[in-house]
Length: 333
Image (cartoon, rainbow, N blue to C red):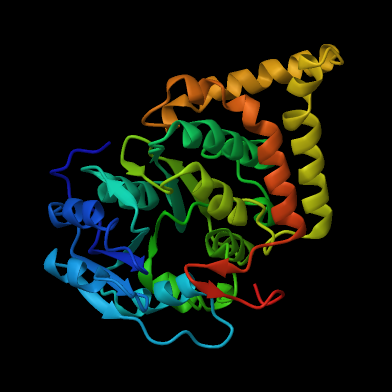
């Protein structure tokens, strides 16, 4: 993490899209208010029914009242588009409302993008799972991403159609993104973060992923039921993947992740299953640093691989179309 006293190479605007985030947005706003590397914080209030706008304004953010959702748009990319249009900084950092930044996050993002020549970066932080149920299920669902796409942040750049991204935290040059159409190319995507990364890479941008687990925490869900329902909606990447790739990814998850341990437990396993189970245990150790709290439930998370594979399969075959109180037409997302 860089020294907090350093200055980023250019003025930075942080945009936070927020819909009914009154009880979660506080830590992000407090941290950004104390960060002299941030020139302005713009909160786009996406038709909230609670006090999100009042909380944001009281914390010193500039609140943009979201316009009604246009036809063909999904809520988050529409809010981000409005934030992009309101931003004045050279650099645009976007954060989800549940992100809890640490000192130096913004400087790390901007300096890395500038010095390493990235046109668009997304970043992964440290997950906060408050219940044992979350610590059991969340790592198993995270493993389905690693088995399909490999570990992020390794420096290997896959082809655009296999890129993944984390929309919780991104950085790009504002003018470049605006010139490329902003969020219009991904207007109808529920998994807008991956859709945007793949679109930008396809038109020649250098798009990457940065591991900054020491720079921010994120409390995505309040319960294991929310992990199952909400993360299970986006994990299949159903609206950005072709059916051949969906089928191949499901085959990998079932054969290499979900089935080896159950086969061993019922006495039907072989040496391949033993090797795959050992690989899975290695992944548990490797991802431990991505969780603020672990405990026994975390280390037992491979026992939830089978349910995670089932949820991934269901989400692939029957993609969710409801998010944040809005329901979108199937086929338009």
